[in-house]
Image 1 (cartoon, rainbow, N blue to C red):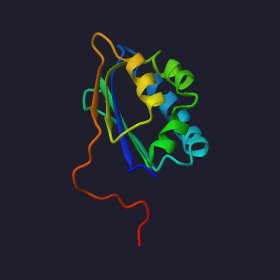
Image 2 (image 1 turned 60 degrees about the vertical axis):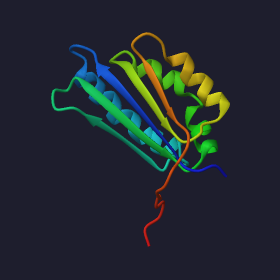
Image 3 (image 1 turned 90 degrees about the vertical axis):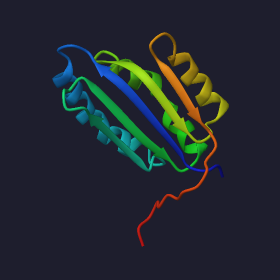
Length: 128
C-alpha cells in the first residue's frame, strides 16, 4: 500500500457564475461522498471575494486516488462551466495513469506541482 496522497486544486470562479457554482457544488458533494467511499476527506474553500475556490482531497493510497479519477472528466466538464483551473498540487506519489491525466489538464496558466517525497508527519484516519 502506498502512503496517503493529498490532492489540491485551485480554480478561478468565472464572472457571474458563483451562485451557479455553489449550487453545483452542493449537488455534487453528496454524490462524491456516496460514490467515492475510499476518499477520506473532501472539502472546498472559497476566498473572501468569491473569486477563487480551492478543493482538497485526501486519499489513503494511490489506488483510492485512481478510483476517484474514474469519471473525473465528466465531473470536471460540469465544473468548468463555472470555474477555470489555475493550479493542481499532488502531495505523494500518484499512479502513472493519474499523473498522465493531470499533465493533460495543465498548460498555459495552469500549473501542476508535484511533491512526491513525504518527509515526516502522520494522518489519523480514525479517531480513538
